[in-house]
Length: 257
Ligand SMILES: [Zn+2]
Ligand SMILES: [Zn+2]
Image (cartoon, rainbow, N blue to C red; front, side, top):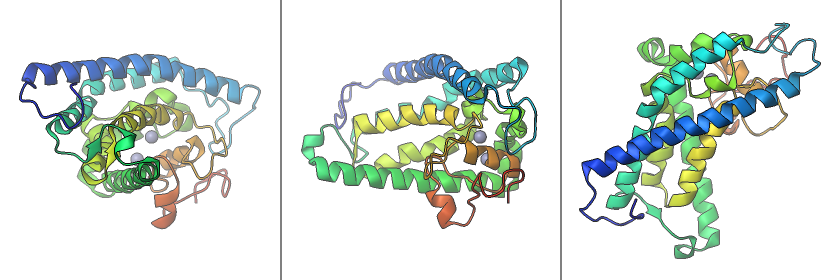
């Protein structure tokens, strides 16, 4: 890219296609490295445990076949997910967003205030996008049910994090891009959050409750998969707490309340 806030007319369709292809390739490479590492982490964490809380399933580790299915779905959808940052890159270059290039443009205090606002917007919009994907039956049936076909603990693996219908991924990833139209955001920080968000998606599908409160860790997200009506949030439990859909892993270990 040529840099945020630059709106040269030189941006061609070829550049956009290159950006999309690069984004998809980067996503595939990142997923190829991050997800196996998270599987290793999960295996180390559950090593020696006779069973895992919540499900009563003796072997909580998903089979190779299940993980290969997750990988196939992810690889099919990744090129479509790349459309999102490609569009936002284009919008930033055109000066349509509120992104800024250097922290010195606003100062550190404003930078941190803006980041908090950016995360709050992302949390709010992602929560409601996810919740509506459940509440509106056709959206659930045709888009989100794909991801919820892994609703048994031994069917969920870190590879399931991005194993979504393309439009489901765009609906849930979209808030990261919408936020830069609403909140002044340091562009590199935005890209970093998007990158870490993809890693986070892998992490919350490892079914491990790492006592990361108030973060929405794997212990919370597995309850989402088991109950289908709790813990819609992404990074923190904040929105579920505010809107009455929070279920703590420790409050009822065998059955979501
Ligand atoms: Zn869901
Ligand atoms: Zn999930």
